[in-house]
Every structure is written in C-alpha cells, then in structure tokens.
Image (cartoon, rainbow, N blue to C red):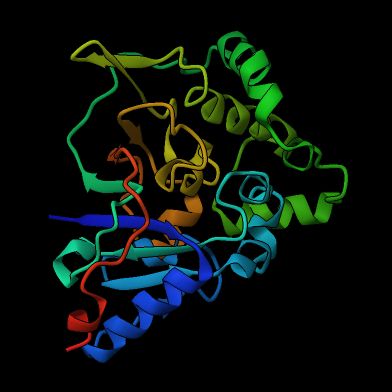
Length: 252
C-alpha cells in the first residue's frame, strides 16, 4: 500500500541522516523541480532542500507559505519507510496513505460558500500576501499555467478563489467529518480546483488537526503520479525531541 513518511529537520540533522542512509547504500533523490516529486511511488527516499521552494517558477508564488511557516529553512525528507527502522528516534511530521474516503458534502458550484471560505478571517490572517497577489503574473503567464496544469473553462482569478477556499478549509474547517470527537477536514473539490496540496501533505497548512483527507493538486498528479480526484489520508503525529540514537551503529 502506498505510504509516505515525512520529516522536517534542521540542516545538520538532515546531513547526518543522509550520510547514514547512504552508508547503507540508500540514495536520496533531491527534488529537482517541484517539491512534491518525492511523493512519487517510484521514489523510495527523497528530500526537499530549502532552496527548492523557490526554484520552480510555476509553484513559486504558492510556496510563499513555506517561507512564512515554522519550517522555513528546514530540510524535508520523504521516505517509504519510517526512519525508526534505521535507528533514528525521529517522529514523522505526517504519514500519507491511500484511502477510500468519500466526502459527505461539497460546495460544488456554490460560489457563495466558496467565496465565504476564501474570505474567512482565519485564512486571511495566515495567508501570505504573495499567495493572493497575482498582479505580477501577466495574462500570458496565467494562460500558460492553466495550460500546463490542464485546466480549462475558468479564469485564473476565479480559480484562485477556489484555491484559497480549499486551503481555508484546513485552517477553519466548514467541510469535515468527525472521528472520536476530532475534526477531520478534507479537500473541497476535484484535482483541477486544487492548489499546492503539498502544503497540507507536509503540515504547513492544517497542523492543528489530527488527520486530513487530501485530493492532490494538478502538480502532484503530473509530477508525482498521484491519482487524480482520489483522496489521500494524511495523519500528523505529535512531535518527539529531535534526537538521533545509536548513530554510530546505524552506519554499520
């Protein structure tokens, strides 16, 4: 079953872990373009260095969220297996798995509900100004982005409202399910209406919730091969101290 473990770590910790894994003949693939590439089922171990969040122009505006998050400057390691299996006492930030989740309700074509979510105070207070400011993109750039992502029949400005509403639902949920009295928010549209789902997958958005159900964005489908319109379960875990145990033995 598709499973990914994600870990945020400071540079020195990352290099120690990377070296230890390489000593075991495990190669880590760097995210050369989009930060979602290591989510691909074809990549067992991958990582995203801090500079990658500004490297890919198509996602640069969206990924301002990273720069303003608590993870800014950190490395992200994504693996098919928990690092505890290799002797590291590191708790994953999230565990990402396939699920058969079906949303009980969606806003659909209700633009009023979508607009209300996008304008929610909780979202507006957290959203980087650069994310909602598309004035730097001319019409040709906007059209190119829509074409690459395979999106038709909607303007870039209207699509941005959908993007904002979806992220907002992971900050102040209006569409959610309950599990053991805990709120579980979920994506409120299909893949073509999603944006930067990596922000939810990697807990940059939605870390207040025990679990999330996420539909991949066009980029995650295109570059990481994630299933279009299919929900993926993301389970954030409580953090443990960033300590590496038995490091010497992990190298042999």
